[in-house]
Each structure stands twice: as structure tokens, then as C-alpha cells.
Image 1: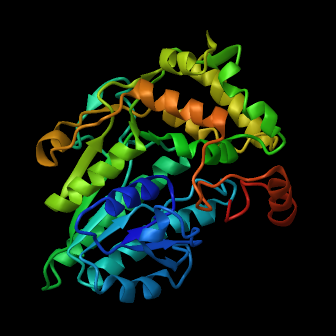
Image 2: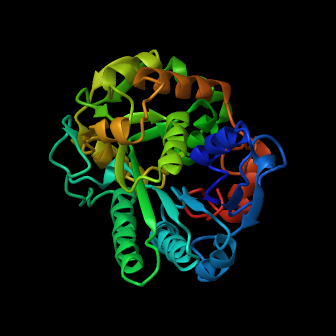
Length: 361
């Protein structure tokens, strides 16, 4: 059972399941059923919005025959609808975790994030024992912390209700990216008035304003999917950091974009991001700038030893693949990762509003 199965990590995970011999039965949950094309044709699909009030009731009967549940569902937009993001992330996680517990599922794998860690160790590698307070200015970070708080509650309850306890695995990856995510990322991050012809020229930026201190844990989507598979096979409880061996630096980003790096302090970047957000010129909340310059690097030793997991992609490879995908408008066929034509984008804008306000991007 996979929630958010049509998204970035879900797509890679379905490819891994499809390649397995013998085949594993996969039930997939998404807000919109993707086309019957690889790898989505491999799963049995159910449409459920985890932000809805009936999510728990709808999930329990689906989970009753599941040996494991992988919870990947997340919403990055509509960023201006704080209530919807909270309901999707936190209430959705509660619905999934409580349904898994009450349906007597043996194992829950939850996709958390390195964003849960408390600031104050930027550029340092931290283990899973670091305090989990997140970055107050980041909606994503705050909600990821709250999701794990929910898991704490459900784990405690399942261990004391007289039945077999629910084993919960928490994967805490760095920034996740891949080639086929590029078009979706542009849709989420680029202003709607930016023409398609300009986004094709992204790798030809002459200069790139960035704080040269940038050092981020990143990981390829396929490596995250591989970590999920290994967690399922071992049914290992607890948290696991997941990232490439070396971090992504400002120099790596500049080289990937073939741009001259111009140092701009992160404080100034935040002011610009906040102004653009306030004036509705950008769909990117300033909290993402805060997060980029507060998330610590992660020590993945526990994943190496317990899960026998190792990354197959470097940080440089991840960013180069993503930028190449932006240039080529790479995409998958699901609604989340799919391409939008100029007419389709205009229709969405006119009927549902900007991406920061509509629930189905």
C-alpha cells in the first residue's frame, strides 16, 4: 500500500516494484489516478484526498489486507492555503498511521525529512538523535516535525493496546530530486507569467545570485525509493538519515546552471523572496530560503549498517540531472509530474487560480 504513489518518490518506487520477480501486489493511493502507462499500470489505484475528513474511514478497509504501508503523500502547494497544507501533511499522516494501526498493519514506512532537525548545526553532520524541532519559519519543516509527533503518539498507543505493535520506519532524506521531476518543480516554483521559452533557457543563466555558504544534503529520487525497499525488506524500526555521500554546494549549483556565481547573503535572499511572495510575484515562500541555510548535513551511518543502503548518485549528478530535465522539460505521465501545455496552464489559471491557491496543481 503506497500513499502519494503518483508523485516523485512514488513513481520511482513503482518502477522498483514492477521490476521485482515474483511480482508484489501494490495498492496505490493518490488524489488523481494517473494514466494506465508504465509504471502506474502496475498498481491498483484508489482516489483519496488525505486532507479530507473521511480519509481515515476510507483507508481502514483498504489497509486490512496490507502487510505494509508506505506513506509518501505530501503537498507543496497551494502555499497560500496554510490550512490545506496542514491538513494534508499532519492530519493526513494521522489518518494513515491510525488506519494502519487499527487495520493491524505490521509495518509503516513514513517519508519524513532532514528538515525536522533543529537549526544550529549548519554544515555539520548530525545523527538521528539530534533534537527534532525544525525551522519555525518553514511551513514544510514545521509540518514534518508535527507529522513525526503524530507517529510518536500512534506508536505509543499501538504498543499498549494489547495487540501486536505497529513497526514504524522514518526515512529522513535531504532534498530529493530527479530528471522527471523537473517540469513539476518549474510549475511549483516558477511564476505563472514566465513563458515556457524562457524556462527552456534556464541552463544558460549568465549569473546566479546565491550565498556561497550553501551546503545541503541531497539525494536522488531513485536512491530514496531504494531505501524504502530496503526498509520494507528488513522491517527496521526507527529513523534513518538518507542522503548522498557529499553535500550540494553553491559551486555545484553554479556549475550545473553554467552560470557565474554571485555571492548574495542568505539574509538578502530572504528579503527578496519575502518581497516577491508578498507582491504575489513568486510562488515560493521565504521559508524555503530559511530551510536551505539551516538544514544540517546528515550522518547516514545507521542506514548503511542497518538497512545496507548506499546512495548510487552524487550530489553533483543529482543537480545536473535536474537542470538537464528543466532544459528538456522532462516529465512523467501522472498529474503531479506531468507536462502542462501553455493553453492548459492558462485554463488552470483562469478556472482554479494560481498554483499557490489551487489544491490540484
